[in-house]
Image 1: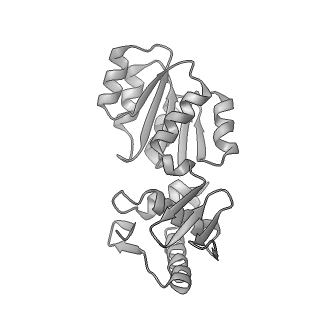
Image 2: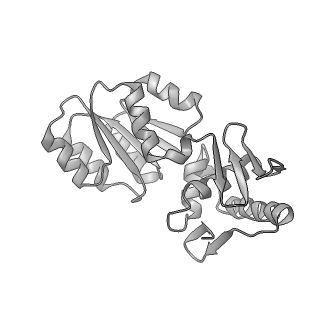
Length: 216
């Protein structure tokens, strides 16, 4: 998953990095934040600013309805909170904000991203600490590297509409502009092959011109 931050305490950034929760881009200023939003997909955006006009402009320019916004402001008012929530933000916090509170807010948005283990139906489990896919008897299924990341992302977003190749690339690769879409097809085929061999199942639907989705 990918996170964009602006004007956030370095200790908070460090916490995200040490727990390997998101690929993080740190904007230099509010205009740089806007630029990043226009050229990349983000699962989460955290912005610390007092200018309501700028914050609303960021919300207008997000690329996806699935991008979650948290605003932190030292000039908190009911009007500020109401207007950004009406435009699609999920939370407004008064600065200074504690690490514990912010992490709890983020976890409430992307709860599966914080779990040590995910289970997909009766098929397999995902060990997010050791980066392993295992069957329900804890026998490892050899899906690693980016194939692991792709499958994990599809599981975490299983309740959403089909996930596009572009979103997968921007959410999972450090330098998405250097990655071609064929890489996604290669990883999807690898996942299908490994699951078919080990579990005799095909759980990924290809939705033409839209992307990929786990079978319901």
